[in-house]
Picture 1 (cartoon, rainbow, N blue to C red):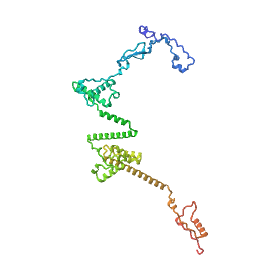
Picture 2: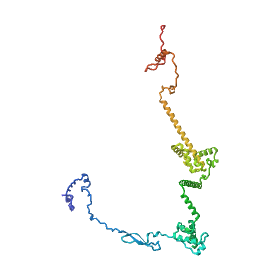
Picture 3: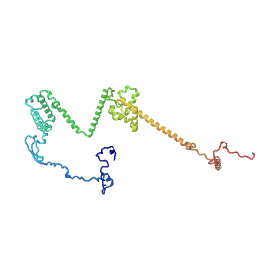
Picture 4: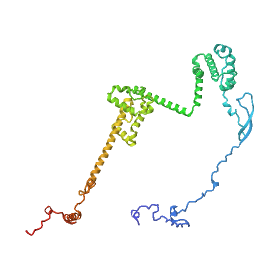
Length: 441
């Protein structure tokens, strides 16, 4: 009897936990031979995964069979639209699956033709007459231009009279330009045409070829010299552009184009005191390299680095870095923003003064170190030690006139004066020996 029987409640149709059927115990699986216990535990007791796929290849989906294209090469005839004589030639053609290629010849697209204008007798008499050219020469020229597609080297070789390539080009382009302008309803209609917009200059073309021939005939030494000249010209142009920008911005003009004598005297030196101007001019004069003195011009942007190197080269790299650091600490730019003659001279003078100051500081440190070393060595010496100067003095030899007796007396007196090795020093009262007692006493 349970609580439901006491309360008169109907029992549920769900089976209780006790009514559940007991599960059959699992049969322990035996570890296969050749497998370690750790591997068997990691696989969950199901054993190792198969090394080979268990699905047969026949059960998989097969790929559709793709038919390979059959390619063959055949010797076939062909015609091209580039020729008007219907000449038939043959060549090797790639044939795929037996289908022959169709269409025009592949290289026919490169057959470009130049449209050479034709003129009438009336147009020639009205627009194209030239004293140095006859009608027959003009007709032959246009015929050859149409035949050889404006290849003027070939045209000049085939032309019957002795004419240069520049003469042939000038005649052809002048006639074509005159025809285009004459046939147009207005000049604006053909104003964008290159033949009308740019006229051919035979003299310029001749000079260009002459300069090109001279360039090809140059030696290596001439090429290096020309490169130096071009680099110098480029630098001058850049400096002029920079000075122009500064002037437009309202800055003080730097007088880049002002020629200065080789001795380094600037036109602005009259506005300074005599001593300062002479000093700055001398400083700049000593720092200007010989290669720049020959130019008779003070090239500020180019020569400043060389002058700084000439001033600070003997000091060494570490001293130069200390000078630069000092300039930065003082708030001075390493390179002047407006490198005029006066500014560059003052900048070099400041560098010289900083270098002198650093050298003096270094010498002062060395002297202080020597004084400290001497002072320490004097303290380490004992007080009773005689000075080196007293020991090094040469003493004169004084011969002893007392003979043997005198020598013996000296030794005896020395024994009397010297005490024991461990005796205490004698007192002042014991400095004299006691007087002997006489018989009378």
